Length: 56
Image (cartoon, rainbow, N blue to C red; front, side, top):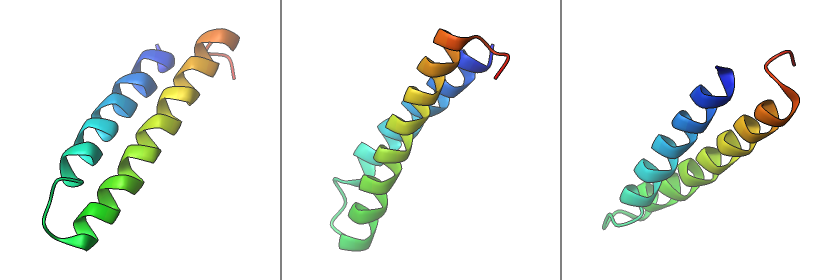
């Protein structure tokens, strides 16, 4: 179950981050890029949990 939660959180963060990157504010664009990267990390975490099982 943790695998699915991490993947969903990752997808949401990645999508919100991509949306923020279309802002006219440079600070918001930078935060969007960071949030997108965080989302990709969460997806990897979910994939690892899936491969190893939720016992980690």
